[in-house]
Image (cartoon, rainbow, N blue to C red; front, side, top):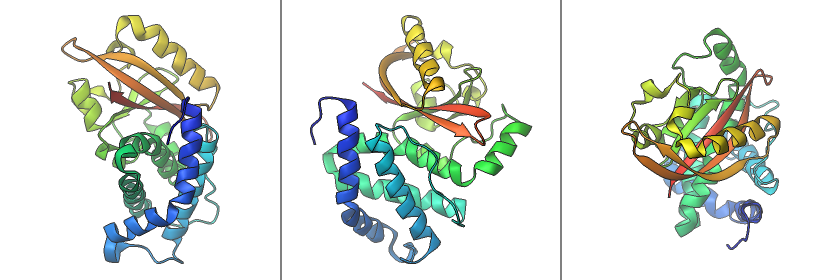
Length: 246
């Protein structure tokens, strides 16, 4: 696939997901074996809704409303495993472009999973908004790119994956609850602040290059892909940052 802009690339990925759905399903069935859900199960319906929602989101350039989950009753832990499996299958089918697809799918999979458990997550956030509880599903720990969830109200990191901890040379538990800005290279701080401010006002995803500074004051250039997640009824807005080292 070729594209002169990220928007065109997103649209191409949306079409690719639709046209390659059978190949992705076959790869997922091979991967899961006997654990693959039955075609008429609620779990398979959840995967179909996820696929449709991802394609629709990418056609809008990554700007996604809430997924349609009415009447869906599934085990969130099981769906987390299935979403990760589906994304892994899609990445395998994408071949050499798999890493680019993974960067597109990871934040969307996190949003979908949180939407399934949104009520419970919102109640937890209200009771303890800055404790080290997981703000996003644990599946994000398995992606190679650095991931940070940042509260747009105060700029604090509310979740991070092991890749982010390695990138910033800081234990994950030490990242959670601290303000993200000090990890941004000083000349890039206005860009970081402006991009997150734009994200707070619009659900259009942001993509930009910047430099993080790790705990040893070493600069690390990354391409950041940032999407917005509304928690609960929108009382809390998170920026989901996937950062790929350049």
